[in-house]
Every structure is written in C-alpha cells, then in structure tokens.
Amino acid sequence: MNLRISGLARTWGAATALTAALALATAAPSFAAPKQADPKVSSIVKGDPVALGFDPAKLKVAEDGLKADVAAGKLAGAYLLIGRHGKVAFQEGFGTQGPGQTAVPNDQTIFRVFSMTKPIVTVTAMTLVEEGKLDLDAPVSKYLPEYANLTVYQPDGTTKPATKPMLVRNLMSHTSGIIYGFIQPTSPLAKVWDAGGENRDDVKLRDYAKIIAKLPLRTEPGTAWYYGRSIDILGAVVEVASGKTLDVAVKERVTGPLGMTDTGFWQPAANKARFAEPLAASNLPGIGNPYYDYTRKPVLFSGGGGISSTAEDYLRFALMLQNNGTYKGVRILKPESVAKMREDQTTPEIRKAGLFFPGPGMGFGLGGSVVIDDKVARPGNGTYSWWGIAGTEFWVDPKNDLFMVFMIQNRERATEYQAKNRRWIYDALVKP
Image 1: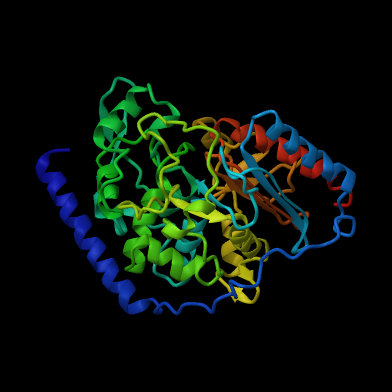
Image 2: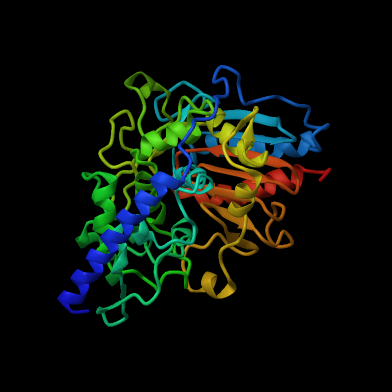
C-alpha cells in the first residue's frame, strides 16, 4: 500500500470512528449501574454432597490427591470448590498460601487469576453490546481506527496487507490473528512482536493497542484460533465504547454489582498478606516473573490477565453465568447474551490452524472455552470455562448444573490439574 493510500485509509478510519462514536452517544441508552449484591453475604451456600448427587467417598479421592501433592512438595497450597444447584458440595484448602507461610488457602485468599480475567472483561464488553454501544460484528477499527490497516506475517518474513477486517467477535474468540509471543518464543514472528513492544507494560491500554496494531498478524482474522492478546485489545475497545478506563468499566458493570470487593487490577496494600504465592518464581519468555506485586497500581490494565481475586469472589461471577446472567437478583447480562457466549465460534478448520486449543470435544465461545462433545470431554455440553497460567480454573456446566473453582499458583502444573479436576469431579458425580 503506498503512503498516499495508507494516509487516506487512516483519515477515513478516524472519521468513521468519530461518526460512530457520535451516533452511539445519541442513540444508545445511557448506562445505569445495576444494584449491588451484598458483599457481606457469602456466595458459598453449603449443601449435602449426597443430595447434590456426589459420592462422598469419591470426593475424598480429590481431597486425598491434593493432600498427597502438597506433602510431596508439588504444591505450596491449593483450594478446591465444587457445587451443584447453587450449593457447594466440597470446599477445602490444602497446604499453605505459600513458602514459609502458615495460613491455609481459604475462600478469602487472593490469587493472581491471570487469564481468568478474560471472561470478566468479555462480560463487561457484552454489557456494552446489550446497550448498543458495541457491535460484535463491527470491525475493531470502528472503535480503534489504527486497526483499519493490518498486515499478516508471511513464511518468508515479509508481510502483506490483511484482506479481512478484524471483528470485535474475533477478539473475544481468539480468531483475530493476534498472538502471545511466549507460546512460541523462538519463532521469527514472536521475535518481531517482542522487538515491536508486545511485552511493554509501561503504557496505558489505549496506547498499548496502538503498539499491537503495528505488529503483523499470524493469520488473516477469522481463519485460525490462536491464543493471544486479543482480550487485551478488547479491553481498549471497552474503554472507547464505555468512555471509562478498563478498571472502572469492569468495576461499574461486573465486579461492583456482584459484590466482588476483593477482585481488581490491583489490591490495597493491606491485602498483601492474603496473597497466595508460588513455590518459586517462574519467568515467562519476554515477560519475566508474572507473580509481581499486585498491590502496586499498574500503568497497563491487562484485560487478558491482570486481575487478582478470591475463590469466594470468583464464585459470584461463576454463579452469575450459571444462572444465565443473574446473581442474587442482580442481573449483569440477559440470558440471550450468556447463550451467545456459549456458542462455539470455531470450525474444525479454524481449530486445526491454531495452537494451544483447549482440546478434543472443545470449541471456543466468547471469552472462554465451551464443550461441544461431552462424549469426548468430561463436562457436559455447553460447559463454559477458562483457566489462568498459574493453574487457577473455573467452569460452569449447564447440562449438569455443576460449577467449580480451583485455585493454585503453580504454572508448571496447570494442565496436570485440569485433567485431575475433570476426573475427580465427574467420577464423583454419580447422579447426573
């Protein structure tokens, strides 16, 4: 593309974004914060495991397994919560919050949930969709003009202009072509991204989105699933569509109304002693130690992985999704919006063309994975789930009306416990 055409495209993109913003400002309803669930009333309502369909002896297999792993030095500590029909059948902490600590992980222990931030930011975006301030099928450039002129990386190291627009839906479903360099850190594309500023955290989110827009995509938007910084860019879209910084938009629209008072992009200094810590620091290529001090307010609000939370708080979010958008009378989303989030956005061709996909029997919806074949995957069809790189995980299974929250800080064993949790929980579910 020559400079003159490129300049015209940028001018057109800016004008389009301005026109769209003005139209939204006049046409969309103003935001009215929903009422708040009482943060003093716990999300954890205990029930009888047998009445909820679980075999206590088989639940004890999970308990014994986690105790043994802590005793063997595999984990500093862990917290597992399992429930059905809105009630908790199993809830226990194991080990300690971290090396040298005496506190046992509990429902108030704070964990860096990393990529479990993604569903929260996606739900925030979906509230804007409901208000008409955000369009799932609009080009990202409608909100971020710099995304009108994207390029795609070629095998020979050159780039070509993208022929397909990147849609907001592509950001939510990781089909945007945006990558995480640390997944293949030695690849030529990852090196280009690293040199181009992918791993910067010293800029505000809107400026970070401009940095990413200059980097070549791995694939044409909408053609392949590849895990990456898509939800970080969705966070920038949320900022433009809401007129608020991402931390404020998330708090006003999701965590605040749900009473998630211990969930955010940073924590008060007084909460430092409540953090779970890993057995040892574990650097990621290009990123460094991800277990940094979350009591320091970040410059960059990472929509892809910047939130910390407790099991009790995150259960509020999970139960809201399980109950089709409502928690304790507080509606965050309409049922049809939750249903959209559970719709698979991929095809066999899209899944095969990417990397890091959740696995057999799985698809990917908006902001999280979905089970599309429970003859292959243990949770029931329609189960919505995601996890964090330190091993935290949650899922809501509408078919079996089952939910779980699992918290550790040990990225080396994240996938190990994904498999163990599915085996432990569904082996114990004797009355589906």
